[in-house]
Length: 90
Image (cartoon, rainbow, N blue to C red; front, side):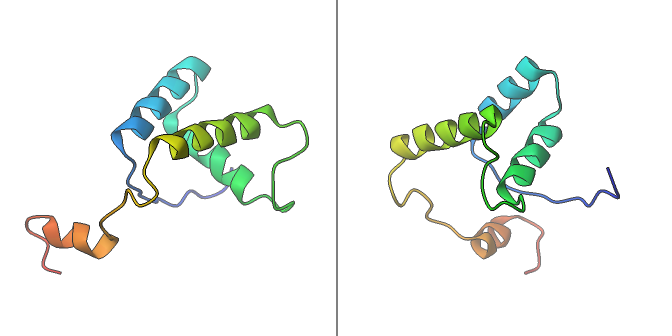
C-alpha cells in the first residue's frame, strides 16, 4: 500500500456499532474495512466485481439501513456542525 492520507468522516452510532462488530468478527481493523469499501465503490469497473460476496453483503446492509431510516433523516450540514463545536472560530 502506498502513502496513506488521513481522512475523517462522521458516522452514526449504528454504523459505529456495526463497523466495530464486523472488524472484530473478521479480525481486521475498522480502517481496513473502510478502505475495502472505498476500493469497491471506486473500482474501475464502476461497480462490484462478479461474485464479490463482500460487495453484496455491504449493499445488503446498506439497503436494510435505508429501510429503517426516514427519507430525510439528516437535518444538518457540515458547516452547521463546525459552528456548534466550542472553540471553533468559523
